[in-house]
Length: 175
View: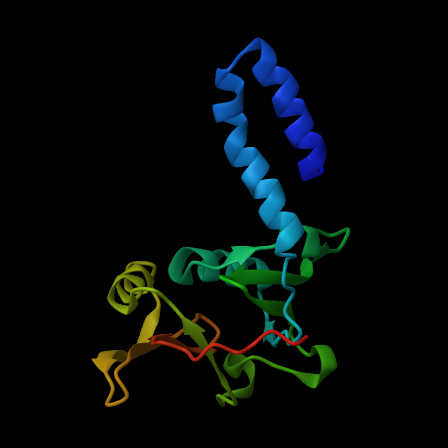
């Protein structure tokens, strides 16, 4: 519902029940924020290949706090997931089939060719979550000279993930 329509409805409801205005205030503010601040969509979406996408999605959620975007899932008639997107904060990563576009996981290739950096609010708490979920730790949490803290972990197929807490410089929105 558009903010102007919601405001009219709240005004009518408040005429009969003054408490309706308090209850509807948050919904009105959310509608206004959505109009004023349109949703940002990532323009760069890294893709990671996995042999077992279902297991990867489960691990990434449990260990690292990613959330699958359900509408993005491509699943075959046989129940095999061929692709999906996961999000963390305002970042999105594609999880795809082994061999798609020539990409293979480190498990299959035997070599790490990249790593993904993810900004988190609390490196130590995130590390403890990953450890409890069975993530293999590559580098323990540590402080860096630049005033930030990080740790690195592997997922079950050998993709390296670097979790960092630092003050990132603001990138101005393109006009």
